[in-house]
Length: 132
Image (tube, rainbow, N blue to C red):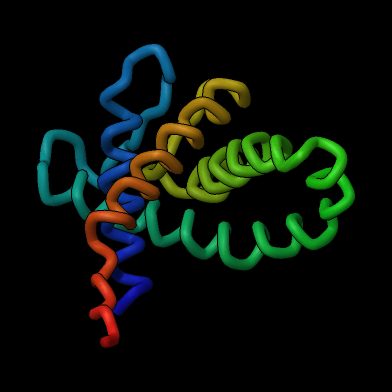
């Protein structure tokens, strides 16, 4: 259930990023002009992004641990941009998916996606009951 919620939140965040014109991030739907196809494409891209973050992102974070220490964690911004770019590259095989024009604009888009995920994660997280 958590994975599905994260995919929906990622899909919403990717959709918001596509609305920001200067970032040059687009989602090409299964069929143009159809709202349902756009939503399904966003959900598919978000699922691919979540899997890339889980599998490849974890490996990169383990390997790049010394860089995290040297840069005080700032390398995570570049790594998140790389993972977004990698997701765009993986969906390039099909005629639909995510398109990122430039790597550094992808880094900025990844920052926006992370902020939206963080905000919605706080809002949607179940509140723990206080123990008395």
